[in-house]
Image 1 (tube, helix red, strand yellow):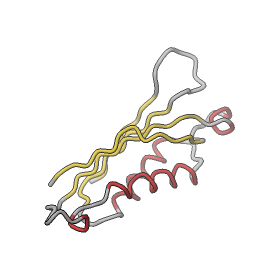
Image 2 (spheres, rainbow, N blue to C red):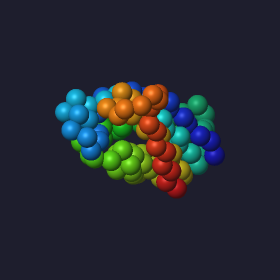
Image 3 (cartoon, rainbow, N blue to C red):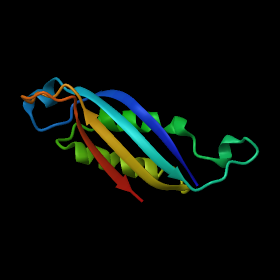
Image 4 (cartoon, rainbow, N blue to C red):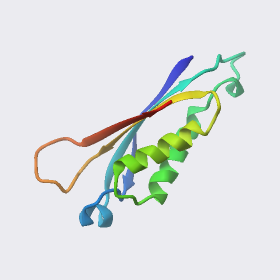
Length: 116
């Protein structure tokens, strides 16, 4: 068993409940941790899960889903990645919203969700 981590994937999304978020959108950063139950054999990609499949899945979900809650987006990503391959045991997703239209001084807002 091993873990694949893809960190700081960056997208522009229209996720949120505030009118500014829906209209203008904001930068989203996504991290994935995917626990794989496999043993790579003979240096063959077919013996593992390709991390190259993760980015396009996340990108499509963000492009096609203008949801209110970042938690809803995280759940959609978890489900899609988990269904990619039966050898995937656990998926953890972290989504950071940058450039929020909220008064205050902070770098970002981040949620983390995990599915086994």
